[in-house]
Image (cartoon, rainbow, N blue to C red):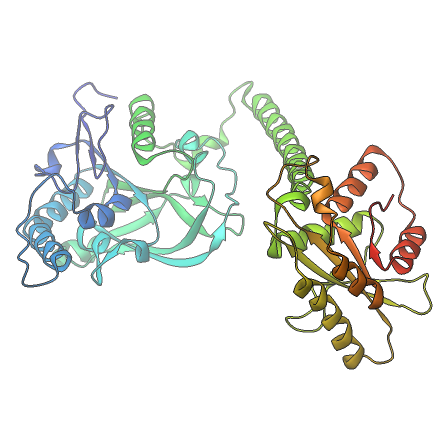
Length: 446
């Protein structure tokens, strides 16, 4: 890079750039910069920031925020023609513009699409589902930056001029995508890249980069400045890549192999992390309630060998269903799950009986056994609270015995799962018999 080339940043402060400006600051003529990095993603948030670097008159007769935005729009409109004029000039004199971009719908303030008001080109993008798959950008100039983009939710269908240029210039102007530096997702949808501006000669270029997700915009801009300073050369034409450089092919193979190994290692890390998270989830049997507890109870029964464990089919009623396959009289176990900071109540146990009755009414041909999973005193430290967790009032025990309800404190499931993880093999038939024969409290499943 020539020593007199200046790199400026608009939209974010940068310690690496020669000059940088926030949107709320006085912006000099941008045509004086050789390379301009624009953080368009900060535009909307900065305009709405009532704690900006300048003070604006905000009469109380109308909504202060509306008046503030109105004043900011007035300020921008007084500068916008100059900003766009500077940017268009840069594109027409072999200038270089780098834009940190996100979907335009995220950059609308009071129904005004601010990027389209400022940028010298129009970026036509479409909202997509959040994607985390970016196609490998081989030897891309901005490869180090792109490693910090883990997800995005748009695709770019077109880039064209903004109709603000004079008719003569527009009639000979074209914008061409550099296919060697296109950035795509795994579905080959464009999410960025470099676009060359042409008339009868090649002029400036615009590079569009998706916003970073793993680092701050300030760090991202500093990184871009470093990349541009290090590698501010012309992009190689396609025919150059047809020529052989000794050793390049072998190095490329090694890089691909290392990246493949990296992907395999990352895949293994992801698998082990999910396994770790699943095991950590079993702690919830001791402290959780509601849907969180229900999910963990379901997974625990599957660990015990009840692979068919599922949510109840009766809407908004029983929490879970298991099959008691070794029992002729009771074919279905209807499970009610309840977590309480103090003790569970008689109403919780009678709720379990209600679900059994409703199930029998809905499916009279199928026998049902009530199972009450109780996580009472869930905030007390375990195992010191073991006796409290398994203690029920005499009338509650009498009710459970008379209605043939099996009460399983959730810590019993925790202990059973732990034994399985230690290597003990569960015997489903024995567990079914235990649940079926117990009318009252079970203190151990294995």
